[in-house]
Every structure is written in C-alpha cells, then in structure tokens.
Image 1: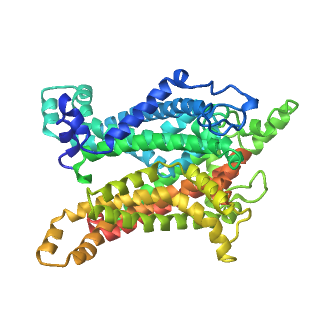
Image 2: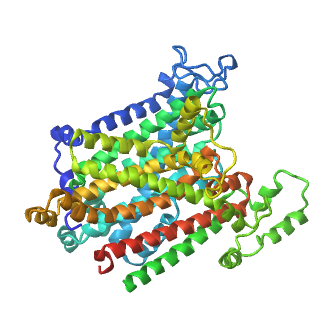
Length: 289
Length: 316
C-alpha cells in the first residue's frame, strides 16, 4: 500500500459532518444503534430486568412466553427475559474485555515489532504464525478445555486467540508509515523513538485497528457463546447466552423458547458489531466500495 | 517458484515445531498435574503411588526431555494410547475421520454454490437493493451462531416433518440415502458462514477486477459484455476467491467440533470434546495436533495453488 486510503479518509470528517460521514454506508448507523442499546441493556441490567435472573421458582417452570414472562421461563422457573438481559452483561463484558486485552497486547507488539524490525520482529512474527496454524475455534476449545470453565478463563482464552490479528493489523501500516518523510524529518530533528511511535505513528494506524476491534468484538461474542454452549466457557449458573442455550437443548421440544431467545440475542449482538465494523471498513477503504 | 516453495516449506517447519510445542504444553494448563487429575480426591493414595505415577508419565524429568521423548514418538506415528478406551489414539482418530471429512466437503460445496453466484450477482448489481439485500443476508449468515442455527433447523424440521437426527452414523458407501439424510443438514449449517465469506470475497474481487483497465480495453474492442464478464473478469476475480475457499476449509475443521456436537455426529471434533470432558489427555493432544497439521497442509496447498495461479506472487 503506497498511500494509505484509510488514513486520508479518516482525516476528512469535522465534528459537524461526522454524521453524514457515518451515513456514507447505510448499515453503520443501525448497527451502531443496536450495539449501543445492547450495551445500555448490559449496563442497566439490574434496573430494567423484570425479575432476578437467578431466583428459582419451581411453580413457574417452563411457562411459555406470556404477558407475565415475555420470553417464558426455564426449567427452574427463572424468567428468560431477565436472563437474556443479564446475558448481555456477561457476553458483552467478556467480548469487550477480551478484545480490549487483545487489542492492547497485539497492537503494542505490532507497533513495536513493525517500527524497530530486526530480530524481535521476526521472532514475534513466527510466534503469531504458530497461533495462525490452528483453526481459531479449535485452539480456543483446546485452551478452554484445559483451563476449565470460568469467566476469567474465557476472557483469557479469547484474548489469546485474537491477539495475533491485532499484531498483524498494527504491524502492516507501521511498516508503510515508518518509511515516510515526516518520520524521517522527526528523526532528523532528534525526536526520540517513543515519541515518534506514540505521537506520529499510532494516530495514523488507529483506524484499521478500530475496524479490526469492532469486527473482533463480534467474533469474540460468537466464540464465547460457542465455548459456553459446549460447556467450556462461562460456568453453569451464569446467565450467559451460550450457557442458557446449552441448558435449553435437553428440552428443545418441551420449551423451545429457552433455545430461541438467547440465540436471537447472540445473532443481534454479533450482527450489530459486524455491521459497524463492516460499514467502517467500507467507508474507510474505498477499494471495497 | 522453487525459491518460493523452499521458503514456504521452511516457514511451515518452524510453525509446525511451534504447534507441537503448544500441543505438548497444553496439558500443562490444567490445574495441578495429570497425576492429581487422575487420582482425583482419593486422599488415601500413598506418596509412593504418586511418585511412581509421576515417574510413569515422565514428570520427574526436565521438561525438554519430556518434550523430546513425546515428539520422537509422535514423529514415528505414535500418538499414544487413549486412557479411556485403551485404543491407539491415531487409530481412534482414523475411525472418526470420514465423518469430519464428509461434513467439511458438503460445507465447502454449500459455500461455493451459494457464495459464488450470490457474490457475482451482487457485484454486477452493485449499489442496487438486490446488492444491499445480498450483503445483509451474508452478514446475517456470518452472525448466526452455527449451533443455534442447527438447533433451530432441528426444531423446525422435527415439528414439521417429525425429522430427527439419526442415532447411528452410516457410511455413504454403505447407504448413500441414509447417509445424506443425516449429513446434509449439518453440512449446510457448517457451510452457511463460509458461504457468506465466499460471497463477500467474490463480490469485492469482482468489483476490483471490473475497475481494471484491461476490462475497459476488452469492452472498447467491442467484445460482448458476456464474454468480457466470463472470459476476462471472472477468470481473474476468482483467484482470491479460491484462496478464501481454501482458508475456509481450515476454519471448517474448527467449526466441525460444534456442528458434530449439535447433531451428534461421530467425527474428530466431537472426539476432541469427548476427550476433554473425559480428561483423556493423550486423545486431546492427538486430535488437536492432527487437526492442526491438517489445517497447515490445507493452507500450504492453498498458498501453492495461489502462487501457481497468480504469477505475481511467485516472482515477487
């Protein structure tokens, strides 16, 4: 990439034209709205949930959706709507924190590796290649299977498998950027490396990283749901979407709603972040248009 | 080409070494040691028993010695013995392999026959409602959890046709109809996300090619649009698509774990999961190493095919 179209585009929006800039792709705004709503639901779960998601009420077991229980109830009479709302907290929480870790670690390593090059860059690259040599989900299943279920374990596993992606996304543009004249100029007037990295290079490679983060959150939510569905993610009592789906499979015919709503929630969340990531890439990278 | 090939093989050897190290270290992640896991909470176990078990598993040796002994056995095709079934792990894997391969194969067909036409159509009708719809459907396909999609299809089919996933797997060579009856639906579920990826790649690659100057030239010299599209555009547009399809095969090898679990199919993925829950560590290591090596082989073939199809790669 001789010129980085991503960067040139990102500098265009001023605050007042930001919305118009965002709507250059029809799907970003809906995606952003759904993602925001879900995040709000996750944050305000205690306030907006009609019931306590953990309270067992055997008398109300397997109630179909009704005005009293909008999404019905499960085997223990727990309100499914409340469990889905609290599930947003678990799933988005794991998604945001694991991707945050992967972004900081992978981004930092990519930045440093790409900028300084040499032996450490080569070694880092080889290590990342090793991670790319596994089917991602299989690696996640293998590590999670060994560590055992748990929220922190799930975060760690997902952070590990997605770190190489951020390494790659950060390193590539750094290679292109460090050869540019303004970096040479900064060097020649004696600016130190740390300052060049943080003040000059980082802002210029931020947009591909943001796009990657948005898409990766979508995949992290999907990965967490898969792990939890298999019994390797969040522990049994947690009201996470995947865990609830896992519980629902044994009485699929009897109470299909237990299997329907958490799945819809996963799809909606993943779709929202995919729309944002995809739309941003579309806006930032004219080649895809 | 030779230089490219040698280079590619060398990097693969490095990665392969790394993969074996990770698979070897994997069982070190379990809380405690294998011996403690095996003995569980039996408090009566004497110190001698623990010591002899540790010796048996070589845990009293330095870790690089343990790795060396393990890797020499693996290189001789000995993946160890399953703790739960006493069957050689490699033999165990081979008995499950046909299911996983068939599943992956069906999924790839689904991805190609849905993804490519949809992508081409979407590119030709760029920025129309048809294009937007196709892109939204593709994104939705990428966002549906495969296990949920499977569950919902089972639910609908069981309500409408009293269909149920079969209990016993039948080889396609034994009874093709029975086999397909049980494999088509899982294969379709597994292939959905890949179809979406293939569609998006086909679309962007096609758009990219259509903007090239040689397409303008082809049109300028009066070729019919159909000829321009098929003989000139599509031929080049499909090169990156082939790569993506190859890479998807690797992704599918991971996805089979989930699909096999949902539909109760006896493939390698479900074997891995079973071994994890049974704490059958030789089988866990064996299956993961096996799938990772398969994944690397597929990626190697894809890269070579790519270099073969696109001369710009091998002469770069």
